[in-house]
Length: 136
Image (cartoon, rainbow, N blue to C red; front, side, top):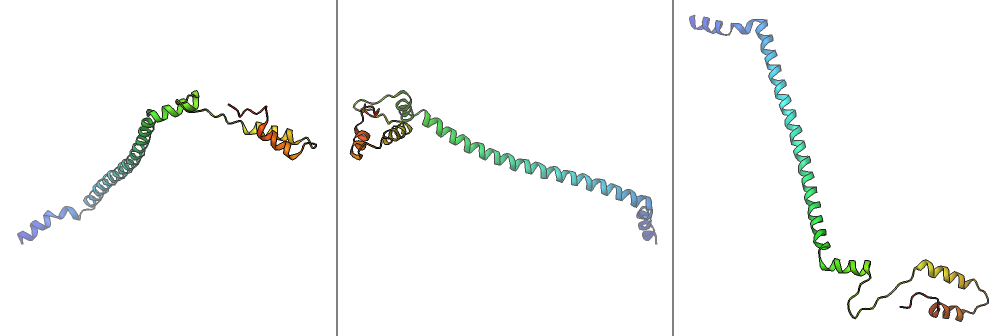
């Protein structure tokens, strides 16, 4: 009976309502702390995922910008820029000036306004007009 008595006295504190309430409070506090840690972990993992996506985007942009810098530093770009903006050309090349389309349309409308001119004269003026800016 002494073994039964010692077991009974060892777990006798579980029979009191105060100890059960205190145990439940401790359990709730521990579970609440674990829940907060879990929430922080989820938030950190989400932020890591966002930062990885941003890193991938920045790396892609970096590669594109590096390729653009390489192109802008290439002789092909410098030559094209000089041709387009400065009007430079290589030896043996000829420059061609393309007239403004709106100017040609206005001139064509003005010439077409004369109803007494023949169709042949209109075509002749269209191709061989002396006030044309297409000649170099």
